[in-house]
Length: 245
Image (tube, rainbow, N blue to C red; front, side, top):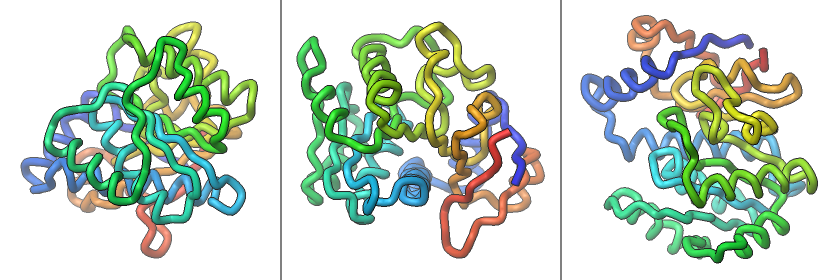
């Protein structure tokens, strides 16, 4: 199915409305977003063919979506599952997400050396890399260590054939314009999972990329007011594949 897009400012305003007028809490939305990501990963690269996964998490809500997705992926049967989380948040919500990962014996790597030896090892042994570093609220420049993290993720994808799944926005892309500099211009995820609604950057995806719309929590009234055409989700899924335009 084709899809419409939601500009960055409108996406931020809609998030605020969901947590005020609509009564959602941030942890509810994060749980639904992370589940959507995990289901999209499973549909694209099931554990039978791609059993090993590393989740790259940033310090904000996009990283929180990644932490939630990691828990669900463990339950979905992925054998080797690691979380790379170089700037952990100290907010209670994020600390609780880390506690949940510990219950499932999911290793969280929060310290690394200047050569990214831990990250390089995990990328080498993984089939799938989930990019949950930055979402639609990202503003350049990309500060250390995240520029190095993205560079190594791109190398793993382009030189080693690792599959990259981006959460909401490929990290470093401009939410409205897409790739924004020489380094990031080389970055095209194999899968994009748009959350709540696709952003304009989704129109810059390569044609062969798969694109999923995740977040089955928007009412028809809200959708009409914000100009969102809700897709037909299959069965009980939280995610649905849409056309790359």
